[in-house]
Image 1: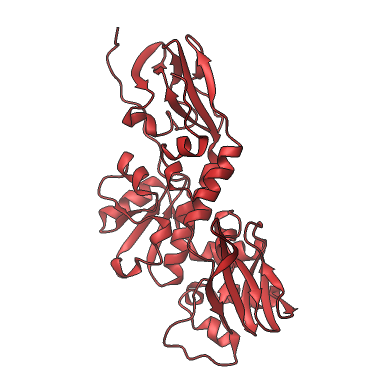
Image 2: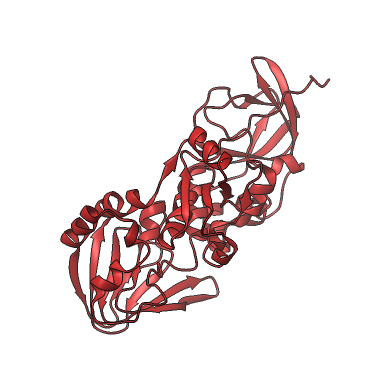
Length: 356
């Protein structure tokens, strides 16, 4: 029963880990170990609130509640591709009934952050400028003409401009670096910037975009709490305006994001809205809200034309992290979208008769 598969390959066999990019999968593998547990021991107990994802690699577990068996879970089965009973606090316990099991135990927040970082888009440029807005020398007017800023209350807009800091950069200076935590939202006032992303095959970074006056970047790391997913370097001497994380959240993020609890979300869908699931296809296939449309976060920008600008969308993921990033992207492009507060609740394991 001993598993000899390389750990990154083993991780890739589980959902949603199969959606991680190779570099993040390797990083996760360095922080993860294959563990064993003997017959009769509990992997976790009913009521635990440990924020960990458990994956069964080999052996057999029984899920129990109040001393009653709910189901058997066997390593290698289709059901075992998903985290074991992920709803917190745990609605059941998991007991080893084979001679031993092999399992993985991974911090659920780490997984969600990595998924959000990977899927938030190829780069962090918000591409806010309307296509019909000619470039000029007034960055403030250009920014105000975007769909995103048309959703912001006037008092907030005034506060944004008052709290922004002007920073000068020389050619070749790095403004934000891939992998660093997010700290500021930026708008280009003068000069040009280059956006690059490092990949396993290109450590120098591949070119993703060039930015000029009125373009903005850096918001996705502030929305999702993920790390920067690209590096922005000055091509020329220039000036940027920046807004710190706390002000961005208060003045820009919150007014642009509408949060709904499950009852409110169901009412909106009943009135003609549509559930939009931004998780990976493997997560969507495993379980989903009935009638939902699956559009993974990493495809949002590429598939905007597939969405109806007149439809009210209720966006969800497991935690609210990926869905809030997706909703911000939709909102800044003029779509009607709201976030399901707290994410899509995990299902309880189905009750099943005892198996001898």
